[in-house]
Image (cartoon, rainbow, N blue to C red; front, side, top):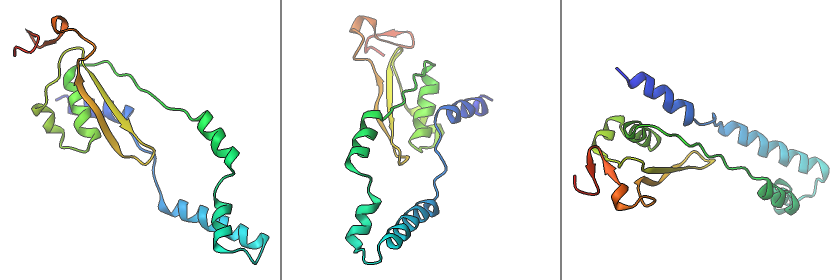
Length: 141
């Protein structure tokens, strides 16, 4: 059975960092405590301002922001399986999907962990004479 092997491949490329709401609460709590200790008469608005990074820090973050792209070249069955798993669909649903040979699939994974599929099985980069599905050419299948 190939499922354990394909699942290992999926987990290698698609994973989430462990998120803990307690960590966020601690960060916010510590920042507010620091703001209060610096000036006892801070208003809530000033405390919130202290939590936000200065504008120059934000612009530097945007300039240095890094995006990761993983390019995976593999069989269409693997792509369809990973498609279902990434979108939290039952893995068996891959049997209901079809992709052309040499097609492109594009996922967006946001820092929040939400996943969107921008395209599945796109062959816009190929001419009709180069598009194939299994043994069939073009859209005649």
